[in-house]
Length: 304
Length: 322
Image 1 (cartoon, helix red, strand yellow):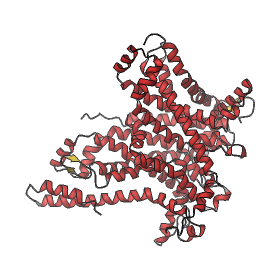
Image 2: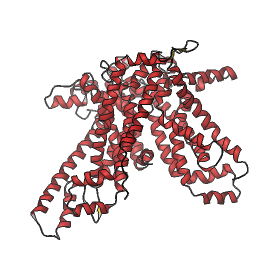
Image 3: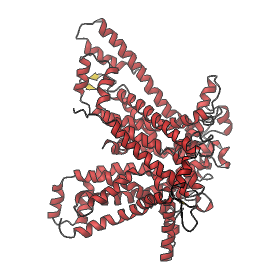
Image 4: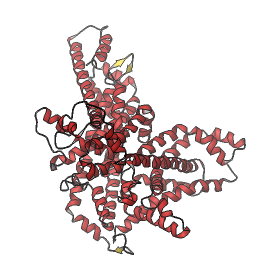
């Protein structure tokens, strides 16, 4: 690898770097500048106003509403998804007991794994539209069809302020669980069977096997899952844009709004400096979260 | 439920050699209860996943009266005209074709440019190598939202700028509301992960093969396309699947870069098309067509998944396992 190395290297890097710098790095850095200006997009130059956008943002009730929703999503989305996924992954991999020295899943494991993962290949916006029909407030919706069938009153899930965010969050859980079942399954298959055998000989029940063997040995994977789902909670947009009752603007009455939703609507009203400020806040929150999670949940790695 | 038989039997044979004690009998009852409960939980979740999909599929054949009066039954006949209205009147056919075109171009370009950059960065030493690598990888930390506002103007200005410079209609080709512009943006935002994943992959390939090819007189280009790319096939397939599914599902970028209105609507992609017909005035009442549209949007992905679920599962989780 001597002659002609540099022309080759430059030739191969030119196009990818040019595209990446033009469409990712440059706009990303420019956001920080625009967030310090008043700009409606078609005026000649953005006008420098310092931190005014941020001041306005921190005085906005909707901003704090969005932050509160992020806090809820940040706790509930990973917690629920990981709990369900761990439970199923355990059943599908080691729940069936040992057969000829090999740990097996319960009956039908292969089928369940394929079905659970399926929503992952569907586009989130399309899944959202599907759940729009599922959540319809009268008996033409799937949920309320079931409820009226068994003699209960229909619930307007997306219209009621108390249930709207949770109903939307459920769609995210619906879609995500299968991914983490597969992810945790991969981690579980790496745990040596001798450990389970030893635990079984010592009289461990399945429940204690789960908490004493599987969970500690899977800690690294769970940590990754938590960071992924946390970031998903910050980037929550498509489902709300499709499902929120007031045409996607975090309704009813801001009960489902997130920072991404606020950003999108500020941008569509040409409040570009303000929208950029929301983007910057979102970026720092995401970064802080990822760093904190990796730091706080750090444990001794168990070698096996 | 047949779920409980296998584990219970397995345990039977294991314990039959020992003496039966009340403790073991108790544990057996415990296990049987556990597997029955777990079988139920799995079945319930499977129904929660499949139920809405089957329900939407069945509803896509129903008349409005049927949707109202009997949301539960099998449709009385196959009303393909619902599908026809969705495909033509609601333009799902056009949106689907647009999505296919965008994803075909953007994934091909992502794979080509991404593997070129990853290959050079992982196997050649030169000044600035690490700086460029970290420039790419840092992109993994930026949410798309951070660049969204200026991105619109970048795309617009590049299209207009090149048009003024060359006199050719670059604004139509890669400006706002163009398929080409969307492709370039998709490629750029897919590069960080693609480069990150493939550099790690190229590093694991043996150097001996590359050296042998060099001794045989292969140049850098030939080495890359004839030797390294075929060796990296499994990694390329994983990232390829990851990019196809990710770019197919993209919603925010097309929503922002291909605005509504007569001028651009014919270039909408499937996700924004479906999202908009669910609120469009004409289709608010035509529920048969709406259900058909959702089914048409979902069906291809389910078929592809059924055919290659193993590769898709490993492709999508590959990034997280690393």
